[in-house]
Image (cartoon, rainbow, N blue to C red; front, side):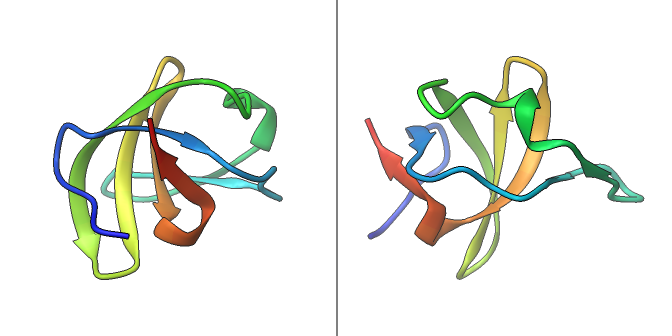
Length: 69
């Protein structure tokens, strides 16, 4: 699926951890983002990874774990 900046997305499966999108990325617990929480794509980091801004932070997530709303 093709994603663009500012697309609204949500997770389609629980993640084992979340990786922050800061200069020095950190692993965070997965319960910071609920499955039904809507986020916005802020950047496309690679063909398989996007930066998504959720209510509790911005995280790097693989595109196979999200879907457009």
